[in-house]
Amino acid sequence: AGLGGGPPLEAVGTRSAVALALPMSLRGEAGWHAANQKAFGKDRWPSLVKALKGPISHVALLNQFLPVDCQARACEEHSLQAHGSIPLAYGRRGEVGGEEGGEGEAAAAATPGGGDDGEGLSAPVLAGRADGAGQAVGVAQDEVVLDSSMPFYFLDGASVIAAMALEVEPGHTVLDLCAAPGGKSLVLASLLFAPSAPSGGIGSSRPALAPSGGLLVCNEVSRPRMQRLQRVLSSFLPEELMAKGGKVHVTNVDATSSAPGTAPLPIQRLGPFDRILVDAPCSSDRHLARQGKAALAHWASGVVKSNAERQLEILLCAATVVKPGGVILYCTCALAEQENDGVVAKFLKKMGKKFEVVPLAGVEGTDD
Image (cartoon, rainbow, N blue to C red):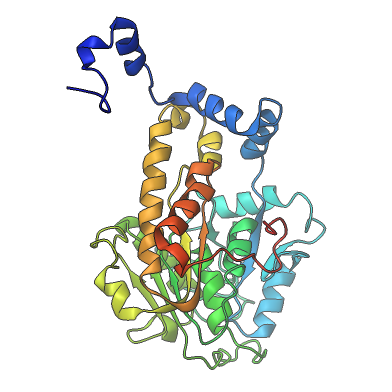
């Protein structure tokens, strides 16, 4: 058999044959360091590793669906104030804009529904029911039992920025294609449906939802993660949004399972969409770094390659259900260019002139 029209393999010679067998994917912790040192430089990589292993800057997403007096009371009781640079986000007084990660991380780790991603529902301040994990929640005698909603959801501040960058407005139809654990979905729901004007008070009913013909579809391929997503949404959003026929739908389909050029039927039926968020499954280098040697032992450059291939398939699926003039926002928490700009470049090449890259308004560092 010939190689690329060249001489038969037997005629290549022992030395060349050995050279053909040598290329192997980098593996394990050493491979992870080697690949990233090559990408970012030996001088810069150590500082990036330190940042990956450092405290996560969590913020609290305030439940905009609660009456304004209840929101104020929750902030007062937990000494929270609006974040100076992240919309909808709150941090500890005196820590906003500084080292807020320790507080947020501790809070998230102790909350029901929390996971390795650091996201989680806050301990209910104004609720008197079972929480998202099915555990009984007590209410102090001087607290008003308002309803079942959680006042806060803790998440990485960068997640809020990513969801805000999609520029969702009331009336939009929106798809969160890889939605679990749900933090970005809550931001999108707040932008779509939260009351436009504050009303109500302690003990009052919920303020009316913003008048909107909008729709939010939250999809997750993993059934356990989809169930967690559903708990998060149900614990934060008004019942009428989550009810059958409501404006928030949860689907459990694989975006890559359909024939090329099509999306799974459950998503097709709910589309097309003005805005689509593709927060694609990825190598998640920070999780690897924080979990240590055991997690890094499973890293391989071949996994990065397969991630990129799957990410491209997901992005191509999104392209089939976005409206003309609509926006797809693609993001990952991976460092590899192969999973980021590389995926976007291949997507644009496949789609021809149907799509173009647009700068993110109001987000620093995205002028390119």
